[in-house]
Image (tube, rainbow, N blue to C red; front, top):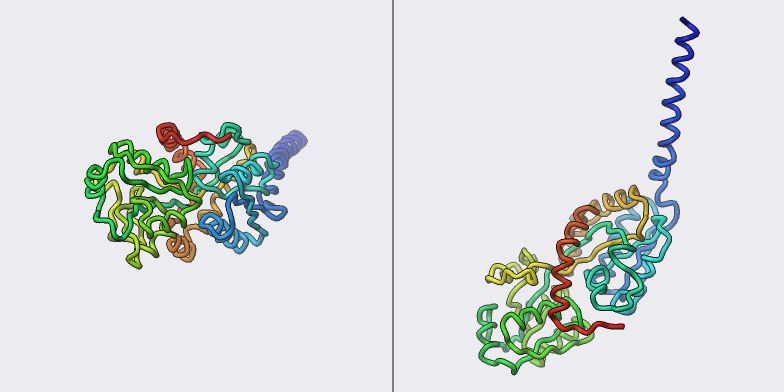
Length: 333
């Protein structure tokens, strides 16, 4: 009996040891990630809201994890060049992109020969922040709200223009939707960036424009442009008295969606890395210092889970696709 009991104990101990050894590599890998500096590729120029958000995140992750996180700006082709570099990178948890709705979602509709398929070549990690936008008019415009804007456009049908920060951009798609819904016959004038749109509003060159809070709010508070409404489901903290378009009766999907800044990894990046990075990202993005910093840029800090990001992405995919197709935006080679 003693010999049999000993043998049973030995077998049981061996089984436990075997299970433990099977788990150890995974647990060890998780505790060691990242084993080298992590690169956050931003597919836009330094100094913009996306770049700032990425650097704020990198600083927070570096402080909290005691590891190195660096931001690498790779611009060009509406964010496609930098995003493609991530899609084609080794899925070892050392390369990620911090991009926009355009680079991670809309570009697949705009470019015939896009070097990556966002839904196949990338894994979503977290939405860092959402960006409600301002619908603005020149300070000398006679309109004070969206209802008055509609009346003004109808009274001047075919005589006015709206400015956007590029063919196929968020501002183009949303304002062209409005243009068609109201049958206003406005002329689309694309500019190179939001700052140029604001300048066009200041000079009265265009009657209407959509811009992010970071460029529009200072001009609005200085009384140089007038913000009529905010896109998305909530008001902008820096302009608390300006109602959303939804509050003003404009409930189409086009006015509900907002731009966002999101993080993604190469497809097949280990799930434990994706989950760990998402958790650490949430800690950084929800800190009071980061929320305050992003609020100054007209952004609302988020830091959601991969599952929540995918749910939001899938819900918006068809909306953006429909808007792009309806806009008549040129499809680039």
